Image 1 (cartoon, rainbow, N blue to C red):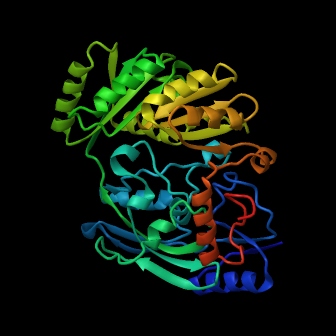
Image 2: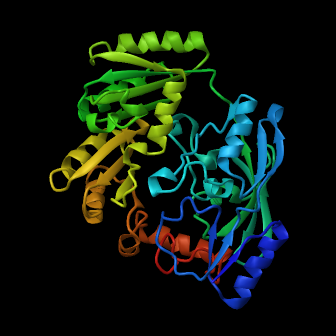
Amino acid sequence: MSTFQPKSEDEIVEAVQWALGANAPVEVVGQGSKRGLGRPLQTEHTIALSDYAGVTLYEPHELVLSAKAGTPVAELEALLAASGQAFQFEPMDYGPLLGQPAGQGTLGGLLATNLCGPRRLKAGSARDHVLGVRVVSGRGELFKSGGRVVKNVTGYDLSKGMANSWGTLGIATEITFKVLPAPETESTLVIRGLADDEAARAMAIAMGSSGEVASAAHLPGNVAARVIDGALGGEASTLLRLEGFAPSVADRMTMLKNLLASAGEMADVSGDQSRRLWREIRDVIPFADGTEQPVWRVSMVPMEAYKLVASLRMGAAVDAYYDWQGGLVWLRMEGEPEADAVRALLRKYGGGHATLVRGPASVRAAVPVFEPQAAPLAALSRRLKQQFDPSGILNPGRMVAGV
């Protein structure tokens, strides 16, 4: 078993060309923070990009940052924060949920898994902010797509094509992202004691208002007790985040309180505590318990989410909470992954995507980890894999068996 740790782009090309010539499938990783996500790989060789790191361009006035793929996201976030800027899509950190230390994720993994956070409804995900990439394909060829300015894409935007490919199409070596000013002020309105269906209606009203709500989530009581050291208590909490200039945040907070006055008891969480609260929601800290109990990430129609959870609880022991106004549901199963039940209910309540984020390797090998694709889309995915990695040497089978 060999581990290649390239220190230059040329060495990455050489490693892929060696794997291609030897017909030796390889696992592609940064620091391995998301290694336990996806189907288990049966590879004897690894290309680890942890030594291929560093910022290659940062122009705060131009709102552009470029860095090598192995650069830790935590380092980039600290660099941006020093200039009052941030990745607006606030990429989540899968490490704690998967039993790894926090802060180990890399820029290449960020793009490959298309990370985002609770601000998704407002800011999108990684693919919406990437400007350009340099990539080594499974053919052992280096190519680039996009550039370092927003209006620099012609033809196929392959930089976005690399998002959510999980390292199965190519190895990104350098990535350029658009960055934006960090919010000056942040405050969260907490509505206490709402049932899941009541919370869904309250979040819909808030998101449809002129309050410019940046994030909306609902934590049932047992989940609310596990964030920010229990500061929310053990009572269900519906959370509405406001961001911007302080006077604007204050005015919009007042407007939301008046709009939702009949919903229930209200409280404010502001500043650093609000930021910590949303980081813990983002990183699924309520379920980061060091176990391998199955955890699902379900994206679906927001107003149908509470119905799916209620129906699932009729036949399975499950914990759940809601982000993206209910459009993202995190489920922790107490026993079996219940894949058939989850996906059957997902189809019943409007469709969407269910991804098994955490589970033992034996389960992830037996259960489709990612939402199975319809036949036409699956055929398109196979053709795309054939174009970029015809010999199937890059992360083979990580997303779909045999692909």
